[in-house]
Amino acid sequence: MTLHGSMQCPFYVHRALQRLLRVGEQQISVLQTVTGGGFGGKEEYPSMVAGHAALLARKSGRPVKMVYRRDEDVAATTKRHPAVMRHRTAVQRDGTLLACEIDVVMDGGAYVTLSPVVASRGVLHAAGAYRWPHARIACRVVQTNTPPNGAFRGFGVPQTIFAVEAQIEKIARELQLDPLEVRRRNALELGDETPTGQKLLWSVSARECLDAVAERSGYAEKRAAFARENAAPGARRKRGIGISLALHGAGFTGAGEAKLKARAGVELTPDGARVLSISTDIGQGTLTVFAQMAADALGLPVPAIEIAESDTSRMPDSGPTVASRTLMVVGGTIAKAAQALSRTLCSFAAEVHGAVAGDVLCENGVFIARGRSLAPFGEIARRWLAERGPLRVVEQYVHPQGIEFDEVSYRGAAYPCYGWSATAVELSVDADTAEVRLDHVVTACDVGKAVHPILAEGQIEGGTVQALGYALLEEVIWKDGRILNTRMQNYLIPTAVDVPHVETILVENPYPHGPYGAKGIGELPMDGPAPAVTAALLHATSALVCELPATPERILRAIDAAKAGR
Image (cartoon, rainbow, N blue to C red; front, side, top):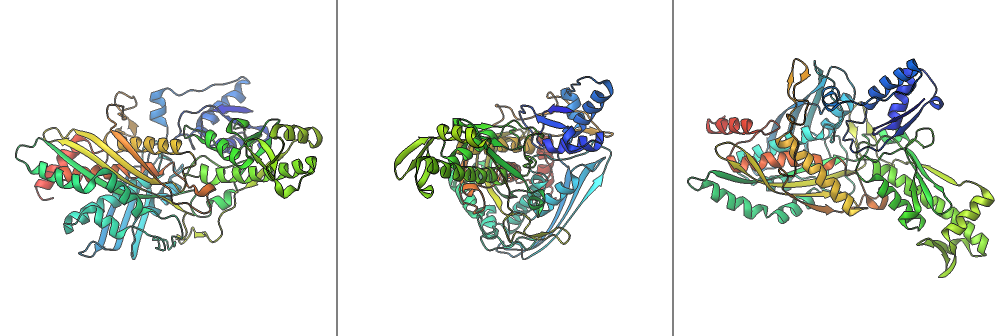
């Protein structure tokens, strides 16, 4: 059976169909079609649609195509886990954090799906990007009467980061300190430990991101100026600026990558090479960056690199396109395979042209030795294929040594490295209607190394806009276990009218085990904007909105509560 579909993880669907149809792995091929976006919603749920189509095809003996209408898609597919977080914090009068006690409850819906791993990642990030001498963090997921909740960009982290950042705002206000200084004072640094006991050994940029955003946004000057404007008699539009700090673990949690044993590679073509990977392009630019990395390793121009079709019957299993792992894990493995292929061809070119193997390299598609041109890449490639046949190199990802995590005690290194971000949001609020206008957003993300800076900025800007929708607009309305707002007319997402100018700062603090120093970026931009929005609302209105989205109704209720001293 062959299945084509819009998905993030072809081998997830492949394994699901094996179990459903009770057949061997060679009897099924799964191919990803062009997919405009994934965001987690196309991680596990495509197995459901694929299963229905496969059963109908088997029963009818005919090709079957299934397409959900928009309302069906919204009503049936998994959503972000609603969550309630409670924080209790011990803190010195100068703002130094001493201890946290955090309780997290997530709504899993009617079935489990990915709730265990969403809860895991959420709780591992619940303490935020801060240094805690003592921490107690608990999380549980409850079963309810809604369709199941599952993976959504950030994977539990936007919920728990929002809570800890709101708590930092409350602490700063209680102690009459600047929230930025409280964050700077307690931000994790190189050599610090996380609540799981992980010592941060490399690529820690919490303070660098905070400082970059504070400077670029004019945070200090605007904070003082807005406070004066808001205090003026008759001011009908209140202005505010808020800042947030976030971190996000790159790759699978704990030993996940070591267990997965992701494989990817390259194969020789008559004019270049072809990348072999099941990792999918869902709008983030994977195909471009994979081609770029393979070309760099082989000494070829990028157009000489092809990307093989995502087909489970032909491609090595490089793992799912999730968890901010594609560039760091799979891209690095592709680069490693391309380097091995390059060494083989350099030795062959030396053999053919009587040069010393160690002297030969390929630059811009030409093999050279000590400054002397030997032959174009295509000539050597075609001669190899004619004389020795296909050449295919597949490598397996090697997990860094010393990165160990106990999944029973939850102690150790939860992730090999973390991405870091800070976001500043400048906004204004109508004093009568509580309508919010976003005026300016500045965000800094530590990506390790921007392999393709334009695509990296696009990832950050897209994630930031998505997070602004999470903060102010997007809300699923339930009644008796059913979603009421299943259309774009009543489920609001940001449009060009709602989005301010987003200014992106790429911070590059290389991760030594990532390709060229790169680390994950896909989910990080989703974590910080929402708490920055509510921090700006607090600055503008003296009211902290602790529930998302921050609709006008919730803002007005928060203002009334603040006036009443609650």
